[in-house]
Image (cartoon, rainbow, N blue to C red; front, side, top):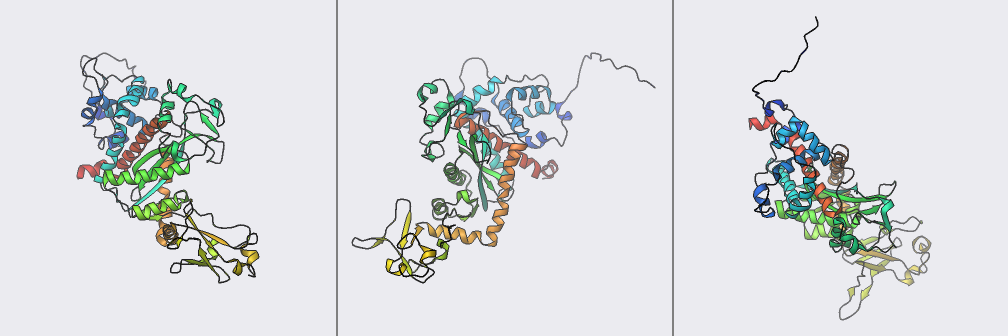
Length: 460
């Protein structure tokens, strides 16, 4: 039987509760338990004027931004539309049916003003780390570090060649990203990370690095650096840097030191790939931080021309000398003053040399040093830390760390594929920091929602 036509009729009174219309298993309902912004208004009070028209509630903007980064809504204009229409989004933002959604331009003003000046987005991320620690998701025993490239909002067609003169001071008067670039020229994670000049520099975002590290077409990019706890892959720190190895290594040191200062976490071991295996970095981990480096050594001593590599020579610590395959010693080049001391070059290497009298008649000379009178072996002053890293990587613990280190790469895949952060919308170092802080906070909140179900929390 055909049913009657349903015609909407106006009612005098309505009873409507947003809470009853949000499903019990909705992601935002699970995340809301771990979002505490009770201190936000007090912390931002110095950044608001005491007179004038009332502003948009800062907690509303932070909650809307968390929705955008948790659910992969990259456009702030679209985010405002979705919050206006979606009941679950309104419930999470504590808006109600009649609540007014702010204009998308409000986010830009607060990002570049109050939120950035107060470093509040960093504090939002650290609050998620502290909650993970309180819930027992951070063991603090083993950490892993890695970096991933995120495309910058910059176009090669508007870039300047490295040899081209650009009046950056003139551009800085009208472009915030250029001012931030000039302010970070002396910072280790940015301008001071390397003296090498990139092939192209973007006029719209000069801090972005021109890179071809993805084995495809080169592009402008920033690097997001993650320091994670290996127990449940919780992000304990995040840092933005230039997309080059030196800056990423410097960012890892900053994150390790900051994590120890902020949360009192002192890991016993750190897992990473060979990009972090330089002698200076390994020595910093071992001697200054007391951390076992589960890191492959960055080593270029192996030869491919058929002659003996450095691994063919045996080092004797008690004699501080190498022994060649023919059984002859190689001793360090020394500085002779009152007391002979090994001579260390500017690159942090000591050179061990064989005697010409030993190498000249040696039957293995063509396999050892066919083009020089005698063989030389360079040895880093941090070789002790390098050897420690080699021994760890060859052990069962090292193989386990290599498997666990993949958790960082899984977080980067989640960041780009699920949260849609494969290209930045904001420009400049500060814009990259803001986006990376919110994205890492979103990943930690999703981790909490997954590992601590609503039923478990209610029973506790």
